Image (cartoon, rainbow, N blue to C red; front, side, top):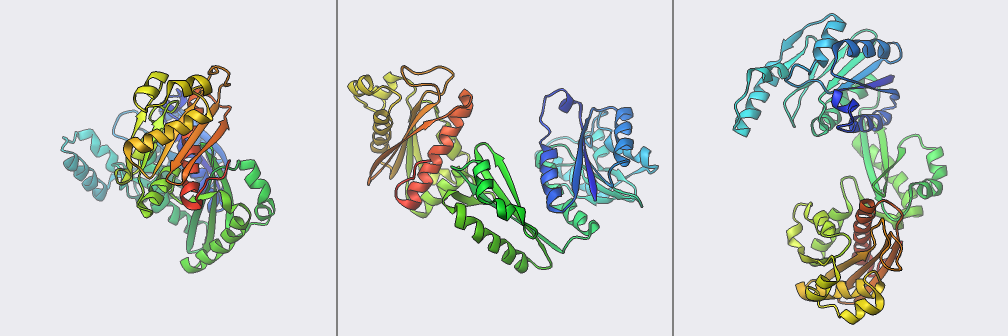
Length: 417
């Protein structure tokens, strides 16, 4: 089965939003063994949408549309497809009830045009929207299948994962069970990871092994297709054992874990608290932790000491130390971590200082970062030399600090990356 993904929306062409839906769909279609050879983006124009549908029909037997299912006049995906396929739209009562309930829960008045979202292609299988209003659709002809999905990723992703994907598995004669398990790594690049696993990647069949990279992290998605969940886990665990024998030292979590959520999980398990003293990251480290539900159980507080004066006043760091060693130094990172640990009486503390860029800080080049991690057993410092843009360096510094904390909590002392 060959697929084409058509994203509908003038905002995509204007660069106002990124077409992240195509990336998500392509990765999941690959798990099903469905080839994606073309991504198309078209504006909110019926004539141009008709043109791209005709082109897609010449080269794909599965066409997936995202966007254009909303209540406004420029949401014209299903109307155009209905006209193209020679069918009509009909009101789906279950979808209409869901939309009415959505407005009632929100305490908002439902306008008449919102009923338009409950219209579906006559003869289609309706895909329920549990995270929004507009339902999706699966429409089949003798030659091909058409799937219509909403544009917002928070609606599209779960709809595809739980509504459309199982139907596609049956359409493409796949096994009854398709199970995916994600391994998350930090401190190793995508190229090095692939190099260490190249023979496994070359001979993969079932499960498949798909490397993915995002924001400095590397992931491996293992996907097994079998007739039972038990058998799928057996296949995945066999492959996982081989992988972790080679690169297990870089593993930090699985599936929906993040560096921040894993840090909080470990702190909770060990009944420990954490605080932070931040200079170049200016609160970004604490923000990453606070984005995880339940962070208040372990995150006590912190200090943003962005300039020398605040390092002296808020943390009590000796002016002589800053003068002799410099703000961007091992000594300052250690002093910051130890000072904030004392100030908030926590089990572990981090100090972050550096030159985010684009300019150097004194004799320290842009991208120089020092991370201090203080515990009851002592304090360690780690030097990084980053090469990205300013805010990329700040985010990487936070993620590296989280990875060092994870390793400190699991190994006693973090290994240098």
